[in-house]
Image (tube, rainbow over all chains, first blue to last red; front, top):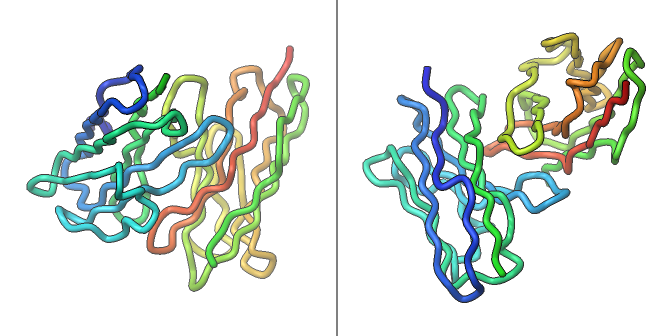
Length: 111
Length: 109
């Protein structure tokens, strides 16, 4: 079975620029998560979708981050404008029956 | 609130040494417990899981037992290999996945 696909793998942008990440979850997985993993820390949940509805976005910095999940399948996460502290790995995961499967992540460097 | 506390690293062991990484959790209800592993440059991979009290999860020689009375899920391996060098994350599910901060393990030949 295909895993969670994310793109791009790496991205370098200047501060105040915008960036978007894409995630394709495992087919049939209703729940999709975006996590931010700063170097040396555990993943922090940014947003959780159930189908195309938002379940939890309490830790999403909504002044600069946005996310959508069209038709309950693919999802995009956008940052605009980016700050230096947004440098991190952005992980997408999908789950079925309380087990999460992670993509390889997008490593974002803001300079 | 919900949280995971795991042993801080980094941990450095010689090949064939015994490994323990401690993990305790604070959660309401009856969560499922997980250990994820992250190899350099890769995403998180599920290592093992346990869904109810006294269950033992195991995979690739790693084991962890769901201890409800001590709210713990310690990871153990009897003989580590160089290829086990990675960062290990303890996690549980409530209404979302909660992760510990990770423990970096380096195994030297």
